[in-house]
Length: 174
Image (tube, rainbow, N blue to C red; front, side, top):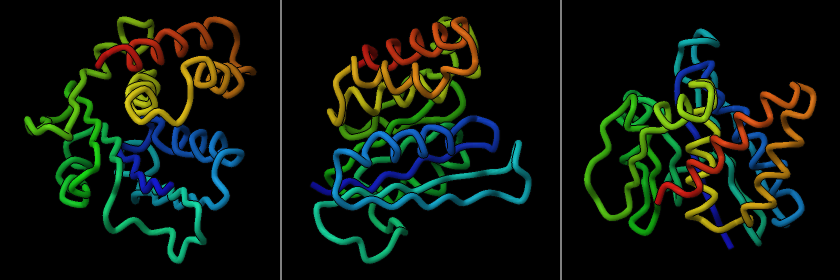
């Protein structure tokens, strides 16, 4: 197994959070893993991304040159990273904030709109994370729900409920 994924969006959209969460979840499932964050000049509003590499073999570099998956929340991220998508890779694009080309391996979903329906636009990262997890098959939906519950355990039941609903909307979208 090898998965090279880039999570990218504006600072404050929660891309680092889902990248860290994915890496944490996969620690038990992948013998080798790297997490490489990159922040823009400003934290909130500037572009940020993180790259997660999972492999059965030792990983020579944490940098992704050809991605097997892209999770992109805004247009600058699409413009920058879509060319790095491998031929058999999958891209997940928030069409509430970016244009997704109509290609077989590019999945556009209105993550921000779906998050608002779930209770908070701030959960757009969880919507698109749910779509990514649902299509890639690394976890069951119950495992993903448990990970979200654990990640937000200190935030209260309302926040957990919104993020659970957001995960479900993304998971079930395709």
